Image (cartoon, rainbow over all chains, first blue to last red; front, side, top):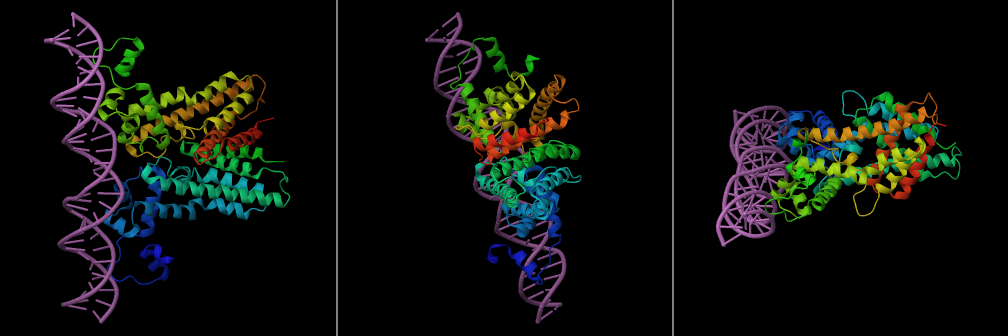
Length: 212
Length: 212
DNA sequence: GACCTTCTGTAGTAGTCGCTACGGAAAACC
DNA sequence: GGTTTTCCGTAGCGACTACTACAGAAGGTC
């Protein structure tokens, strides 16, 4: 199992001391810069030369540390989910009510999608939209993450039905898909230049559709 | 003014007879096929070789008839707006009430975004998301169209306020941005495989946010 | 028929793509 | 210090990109 991930990681996790010459750059900050570039331009439009320039390293160093372009992108997406994108599962699990959970997701999205100093919108939503046939699997990988997020919303709605917060005849699938769509629409709006307060108002309006 | 558009078009519009050898393919069907390919993969991920293959012509024929890749994309987008995308301004102008107009836009979008035999979702929304720095202007051009659509929605909402259909204190900007976001979210959902009936239910839910 | 204009197919341009072979540099172990 | 192991920079790989020079073919006008 662990054999499938890069040797690099295994060693770091097991805290073994590397034997030869240590690398001359910080792997985490390099990954962070790659993440930012992918976030701006998406998978295919981000070139290796652009990445090496932004990461401050040469191509061989990049390939030695991260494998190929696809692996680097996957690792960047994983990092994104653990950092910038972590607010969504957090809100869904921490809030006591389903309505509160969804509301918090949307309002935190309004802030996260427009946070200064980093690209606007969501990497998972806009990171691999325009893909050629040879990288269709990358596009599919992000789609799977989006579907998983929708299911997470759905699960929270279903649990709201179970506790009696929502009517028993609630169309949980439709409600989950609706809020997933609003979430994705907010990302597009943020990319197009919408401000945080505009997205807050948008989120507030979206909550008016909540079953009463 | 007219000098800025390709000579080709001028001649067609003026119904002059071309002098030399006529071209061996139908320009409209070739453009339609290019449009479909751009719709599937987006601007940058669609290559000239893919286009020539889909259009059934050779590169020199493509460049003679359409200029460069960017011009071809612009013309494809224009064609899209006049055909597949024309339902939006039509719904906004034809319906007597603002609510009816928005509702019709969303329901027709549910059908259009999932119509069989052609790519799902909206070309203007997903056609130029992942762009490198050298084609940032293409990305911006589609964004301008999206902004124009949002303004069209806003205008319809404002006219609804004027006629008394909507309360005078309605936040028209927020309402327009909300429905624009829902529209864009529906496109993403359609691209991810949502069915027409699912999008219909989504549209129905979105209308529950309408001010009462 | 000749002539003229335009289109079409081959073939190739310079440039960039993702990726890597190779030699030297640098740090840890003995 | 010597050896070993790894990393780094240069330089370049084949394949692809958008795009085009050129020659010949094909239809119109005379």
